[in-house]
Image 1 (spheres, helix red, strand yellow):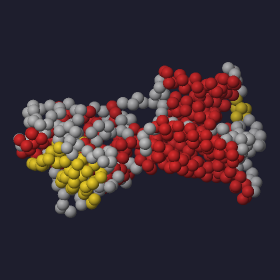
Image 2 (cartoon, chains in turn cyan, orange; image 1 turned 90 degrees about the vertical axis):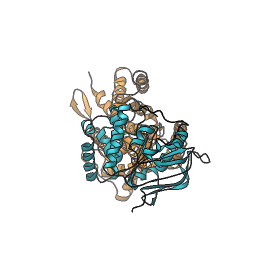
Image 3 (tube, each protein chain N blue to C red; image 1 turned 180 degrees about the vertical axis):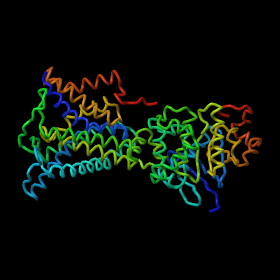
Length: 248
Length: 302
């Protein structure tokens, strides 16, 4: 069981048959890593990650999770396989309380186990305990993202997959979310994330892939990738602005 | 003042409310107005009637329970009828609604439910004729309970049954994993799949629950009024008005909406004139849509 947690080989996927958005992408995520997928707008990053999570139909290629082929596993079985996905937007149930959001996610567990893990999540994210009876739709942007991540972690996934966790957040919240992800990795969770905010993502990532036109065009160590001229060229066709801020 | 209309209104309102639960859940979870829901009610009632007849043929005449007009065969038949109505809804979903839903245009599903409604109704008339029939022809004596109100034992039993079913449904929706899954699918079907909810299972649970409650509501109408193939269709407008008044997706809202409409109908009969009864649902529906389209317990979509 020392192989990669996730191995994606030549993935071809798209919403309509014959119109692939992902065109033969391959990546690998080792145990305990944070791997970042970057790419210009329209590169198919989001579709790629959704295809891995079973939300976009796959027409060719393979997805292996811990050596098990999960390519054809329907989306609702993915959490049972050990892959937890956090969508970019609308990643909580807005009319349910925080507590019910977590209970709903814990539905695949035995109820005693679910209760224990929910209690543990409240220890990890004390803000959520404070607002446990609040409708999730009334939470702030940062708290929502916290809830979305806590919800995904309840199943103790082998791999946590996030689609642009910084989207729509203020710079301060972006750094909060990324330091939260960094802490989660320290706790032993393997993470794959897609990001627009290259600077923030590369700061916490171990390795990164740059996706261009639906396939990986470049791979490298996260800290080095930032200064790689090839990446600068591929990524938006220019070097990202050095200033911090929202979307890079 | 004669307060009899309160009891009449609560009874009518109970039937409307139980039916409206199915309407509101179908709308919130399957995202379409099911115009065949009234016909589930009628089919459920006829199924119950048929099972009562079958039990009668097997064990002979059974004495009624205590002061009620019905015996144990009706209770058994009602349970069987609920299951059969659920199966009818599942079958209809499998052959018709699920295929159209997959195409993503809810108006087509609504139209299909109109067609299904007509077909179901005609089938009932074909099998059972359109002549009204009854569970029992026994006459019950209404007991005076003060304030000029008279109530029969059957009516008391059915009001209690409604209260129990509404409480049970509310607990199911808010305290169980099945209920949370139903809420989850109604709020965000894509996210529901991501958190591991089998949407197809939730859809089946929704049909079963809505259809079973429709069967109970229909059987109540059958016990208190009469059984006709059109009985469900005639309640369609009040049921929709109740679901919208209560706020789409809200079980307590649907029931409260049903009670309000039932009471308003009964009050209209007593104070305005019986010919205005049918207009009540329509007026309330219009008023809600103009004044508060999200209903009493509704929540604005973000």
